[in-house]
Length: 423
Image: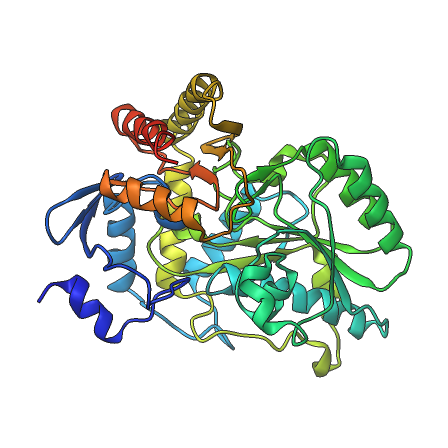
């Protein structure tokens, strides 16, 4: 019996209605930007396996670093102990992060990185004897699936079953071109109430909303407003971090910097689950007290796992190579060229490009649902043609490994262009 059929017996997949889902391809091998299923069919991984794998599958540098660490120290608890690779990783990250980020807290994934940030924002004020219990976020944001992260997310498809059980979050419009003043005005009104502990945002690109983009200039203005009202800012760089936008972090486009940052996905080059939430010294100092109860009582069994730290160090070293930086620029240039061609197509409503991210919005007479008919038609077309893309409603996006070849990228473009003829 094939792996695909055996999979159905026990495995419960994410974001899947199993009653209507088809059999899934069973992937048995990966190399570079390519994956192969059990039948030998080849796929181009054009979304870097949910944005985590920038340097290609089965990367030898990553594999060697992980093997070396596994045969030295695979894991040790981080409660009451430290270890050399966590120290080295914290030193490396503080060199490349915005200068105000000085303290790192380790967890397991993007959702937990956000969860930590939200808890810290709330407890900081609690420790000071100040009641600030609400959070501000963008409409249509996505920050994860644990309860705090889910509360900060604005996509009702994912959260509607839990309404009434979530932290109180007030949402403001995404400040896309033409809506900047509306967003800024509403944020300022909310801040004057003095009820909010933090404003969380995906900097410059809202991924799960369909790669919606907005300018660094307006984000600077929103951060400035929050700073003037002593409200913390949290940059969720889980998707955008480590080169996706053309800079190491999306926040590198800003003049002002957030108080906290959430990192995961490409942090370990697509190998080992790990996340980090980073903080200013001021925030850390809000927990530094003779009173034990003011400590951050939050932790994970695999906090600062040495093997994950070793993977992250290897990942950063690859990112900083001249070859990878050149590849990022070349992917960006390819996207811009394809954009100039495809935006003239009669079925294309809009296109967006930033760094290695390309998004194309297809014209539709009705509002397409997240997992609607158009999305499913597109998805099936891509899989049949050996390209892994996961459309968001009527938005098709590419976020490939940085090492994707020009020929592979051209095939992705062609398959997308062909798909416009079937919707």
